[in-house]
Image (cartoon, rainbow, N blue to C red; front, side, top):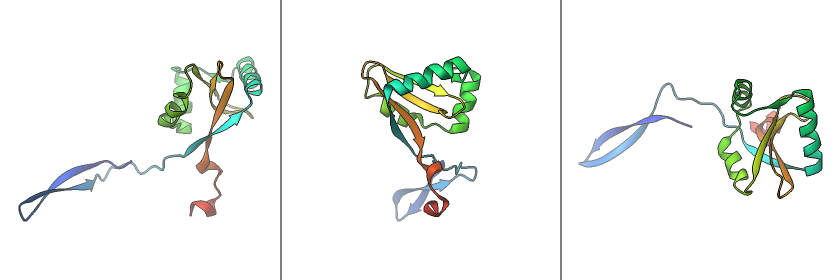
Length: 127
């Protein structure tokens, strides 16, 4: 995302604006996310194991906020996926084999895991 200011450029009496990039603009690359279907019974098993091991992160907790910031979760994408179901819930597993951000619906018996596509790309594909 680029941040800039509009600068008036006088040209033959026509008001035109040019966006001038701010020198302090943030040039971080946004991560591209997609979802991976997870079998609902298997997901419920992951969730219960994570709760028993203390790996479940609770939204609003400082540890959760730090994890979400570190993983750079795209919440616009999360909202778009969650809008498909009336009873969408999230489950965050902080570490281990099943580490990740999950969106699930008990009524529809579906579960999705957010997958970072940029992390899975090989360096040659990104260049």
